[in-house]
Image 1 (cartoon, helix red, strand yellow):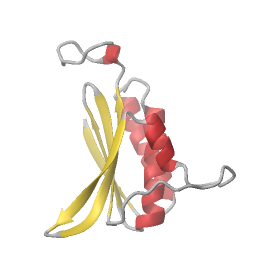
Image 2: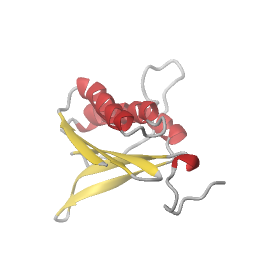
Image 3: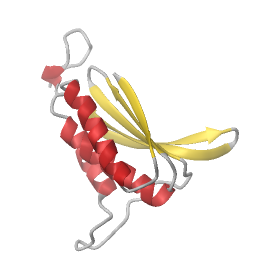
Image 4: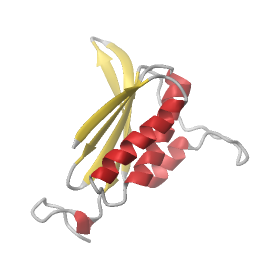
Length: 140
């Protein structure tokens, strides 16, 4: 399954992204990953809305061993972990991604010789017992 949605640079887009991703994964019965994917995509979309202030594209691809979610924005500015106090209401999005995702990263989007944006992505592994036989996945 591959799907995408383009959202405006407004706070409500985080909720819409979370609902979109969760609905896709629930419809696919994606091994209970809908809640975690919904949480992480809302964090990344919130970051894009606050810092990139551009349209945000959310891409979801689901394969036999993992689900990958990308959040593409129009800012060349790099992702940075913020160090806020424990009482702060913001600044934990990337910490959540690091803690809950199987893997994550940032890929620049280049047009010609100019960086025109980035894709921040994360992957969530499916449970080994949920992987269909013959896909090459191994159980531990």
